[in-house]
Image (cartoon, rainbow, N blue to C red; front, side, top):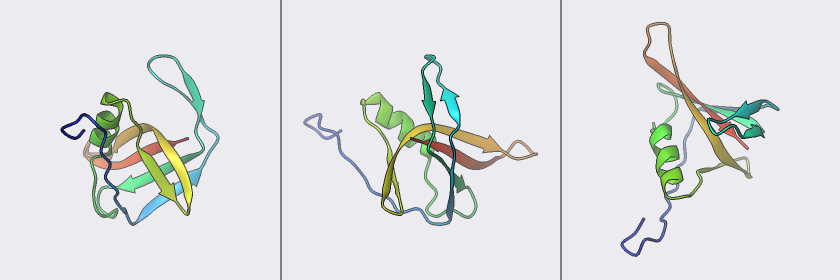
Length: 99
């Protein structure tokens, strides 16, 4: 938000990600259901620049906004952000649900 309480936006280009189409149904904590169009995989080690998708998603929702992702000219809205861990319980990658 700027000093006049208007939302501000930043644009990032993240390389070395993978997008996979899906028709997976997901429920949120408030019991709403949505069908994902795709899942975006963002790797901690290989995707550059590394962004804190949890923080971006939370900040957008706190001001009533959305996080948008454009892949090959298709615009998606981020529906969920899951931070997944490896066998040693260290953060490995994000799986970002897109609608």
